[in-house]
Amino acid sequence: MISLGIDPDLHHAGVALVRDGKKVIAVRCPTVSSNLRGAEAAVAMAQAMELVLTELFQAYGAPDVVAVEGQESYLGSKVKPQDLLNLALAAGVAVGIVRACWSAPRIEVPRPVTWKGSVPKDIHQKRILRSVGIPFATGEKPTRILRLPETDGFAGIKPKNMIHVIDAIGLAVWGSTL
Image (cartoon, rainbow, N blue to C red):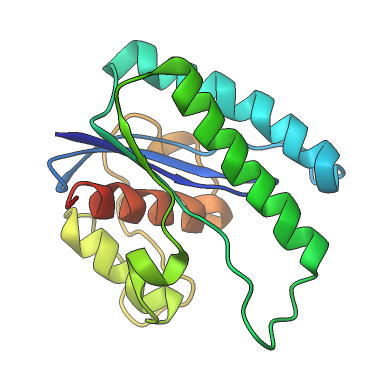
């Protein structure tokens, strides 16, 4: 079973393909200029995401399941409502691109708490990496990968963007359990 995980973002999204919930096949981090804001950034990310997903689809075929992280407003959050709406737009674009390219896969849009619970991000990311056999530094925030796997795509990703890729791996692993 091949699962695709997408951690949407307006500037640095994470994309990961995982086989049988254990083996990372490929990762990507589509990136757009940080000068872009709001809907303009979402449109630019849609173009970047389309290129990345088309490339992965051609190289690896259709996944069996796709998990795109949904968005949620939290009581007391400092996130501006418009920023959350723009992020939700980026998630919707990712779902639309997947559906336009493939008619077969199951697509899930889980809320963050659904796929990762309420565990702090750095702890959950270490659990994700452990589950797929990628070594990481213990006791560090943010999570730092000690040795990049020879998996397709890891080498070109900046360390500061790895949090999105790790979440995408986690989403793909979660998707493989469905």
